[in-house]
Length: 122
Image (cartoon, rainbow, N blue to C red):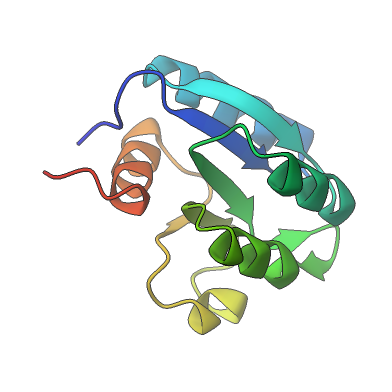
């Protein structure tokens, strides 16, 4: 499953190399990188501003859990995918309906998770 071409993705990731890799994968999938954020403050500002269809949300941002961002995304009705290097425990357990992609991820994993998050029929 692939997300619709042109799907705008917000990437929230504190590791620059992982963010750049995600950007490349998103573009390979035919999606558009709407914006990137590397901190909770940046992520919250981008969510408030909108302009994206789905977000990739790292569970751990510089040692802080991103639950505040997740709650704001849910409040705004914005679909998102958790990304993590620590398995699917932690805040993902508080959001059981949110897809989780473990790092290092592959483009196919992102495609499936994004498609699932935005509820594209299979």
